[in-house]
Length: 331
Image 1 (cartoon, rainbow, N blue to C red):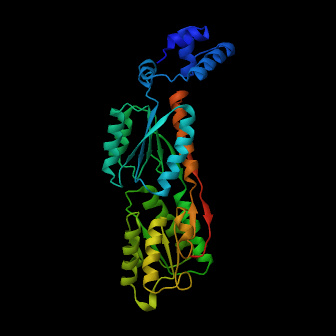
Image 2 (image 1 turned 90 degrees about the vertical axis):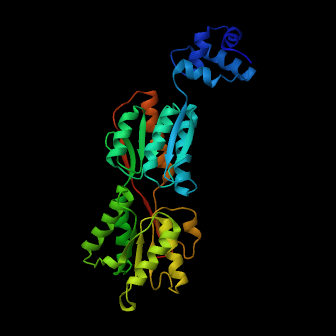
């Protein structure tokens, strides 16, 4: 295995010059850089990650905390993050809370103990304990999905997305609209999407019936159960003619219950969600949804983190991304 000293001798430069080229730090003349890179390419030299970490005090590893692995949303976010970070030589270390909010703090501590250079958290809440833990990390940090005080964040306009989706149903002639949400500890999905729905209904002077509001847990089975509960609590003469679901997986579960119960979608009851996963194209009927373009969110979060890591930019950066409405056959 070649050493930096040997690379330097072959390139006829100093060891410090080789180090600056490999670590992309400090000034190196174009001619010297060219000679070093030619030797590296010719010999296939790969610098020791451990040695680099000792010299630079960096591991070149970024921790990423996701609410759940295996979902298309998580996959798209990670793709965007990795697309940006890999170009700069960073690797990502994934963890999943499996939608258990208390594990967010647990995994933040775990990642810090693994000496990651920074952390990107796809957050599900903004409670005081989480905010306090983030402050104690003293690491470059970016949140996705929730506007957490004191840190850079990439969020979506959940209020506007829900309001636009509800307004679209109203424009299509739906007046008796049910709502399936999630726990309101989730400020973005649980609170803002519900508020957007409520405002659209109030502006249209449409009734919001308590028996038409249910709660699910981000997954397909809970969407099924929530829809069943709504239909069980309403009479045949006063059933909803549309359902707004805060996520696509909830909507797909609700749709399954309605189809099994003999309802024709969208003729008797229409249904919409938010997410734009591939499965939403292929369920029958295809689901009307909102695409949050999660790859873009991942890329923006990674860039915010790089600004902190490589440019020492400590100012908070925040961006709110808008969704793209996709109208399909379920409405």
